[in-house]
Length: 336
Length: 262
Image (cartoon, rainbow over all chains, first blue to last red; front, side, top):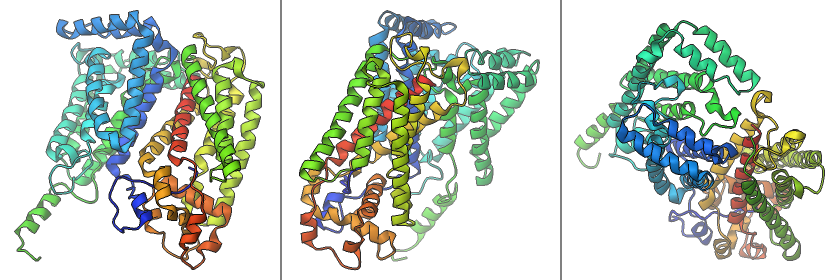
């Protein structure tokens, strides 16, 4: 920045020429900080999409492979769009990457945040279907360790939860409750983590070597330090598929219900969710295979952690207390 | 994994245009006396040329490792500026934030200059920037960390873009030119930060404090209220918002280069 001067959009109060030119730039609140984090993830996603492998026919074939195991009504559009991308990989991928770049910058820029968040929801749903095959949730192959239910649908969920509007007059008990209300936000949290628990208990994930093979398979093409981490983690769960799946499912379920518990337990649930997301990102997703040059996104680990942060109970309002205070104020006679 | 050649070409043109713009700002500063960040413009001008050389190697006028030395000097200079601002502004930590992102960008250029060499430089898709650290040979993921910094910086700056005055609003309120002195006085504990400055975006406040510390405007701020003549004497700064836009584009382009090296 060369010099001074601000020109915000909010009307100014003190009436001086300088202040009129300045406006007031408000420091980002917790929701805005999370929006900016989401924008940064979209930006990383966009730049990964600009890697040369994405401009090859192999990218289209990879998308087509996500149709396998899905019902026909889901699979046919995937095959159709993957065919187009495979035949025109350069323009198609250039458009995809540029859309994601625009979403990132749009969310980061205050005047366009609503448009960009709304567009990101539509884009996330389209990519979840046509690019990720609905995260394999319909073909019994989904695993929370490998990124189910799909990173991009969590982007969309975050866009909804971080929508810049407040519901009701009382302060939200956590950021995610601001736009949709605490009850809906908690239901969404429960559904997400309970579904992850369910996926981890599916037959394919309970097999003795499934988790071992999943983790050790991520080591291929990775740098030595990451490959050795993956091999080490895989050896810990060798022939322990059932036990590991049950432990994981219990942890995921507890995180899901923590949103309904008192504040200390809810915070513990958020911390556990962040730790688990980090473990999944490192060992199960190998940082979204970014180091191989073929990672299209950072996968679900970072966005799960970001989502968990949106559920961190704030000190301003405790569940139930804000409503009680509001009711008490309404009951008071005027002038108090 | 390298990037596509056509994309490398487009980005090279973009960063060269930005470099030309930064150098143009220096010309206007020299000929018309319009305020600008001279050192930041010089560093970004060199970054633009250096990044273009990495994207399209045949554009490079010097051997690759030369860029590492160029930006080592730039990093040393920016470090000195940060130390100097700290000494002048004391506890005003925001003042140090002005040069810190540019310092990290210079460090990233050193990293790319050092690691970007050898037979791997021409990637399979023909782009210049290539596989310095990809796959099994990659060590500590410094490139990824630097790339994440660039994306975070780009997003942080974009968030503040509408909080940065255009030249038109600057002309309408030249009193803003005195904000630097006010911030300097605030840092020295003499008076409260004035409302227009207190409400400014962090990137603007950091620039204000850094400039005030660098130019020793304490004399103006020392106790008295600056008069209208002081404001009228100040020149309108060179397109602060466009400059921020250039920094955003540069950070995104650098993040792309770093991702290619991951």
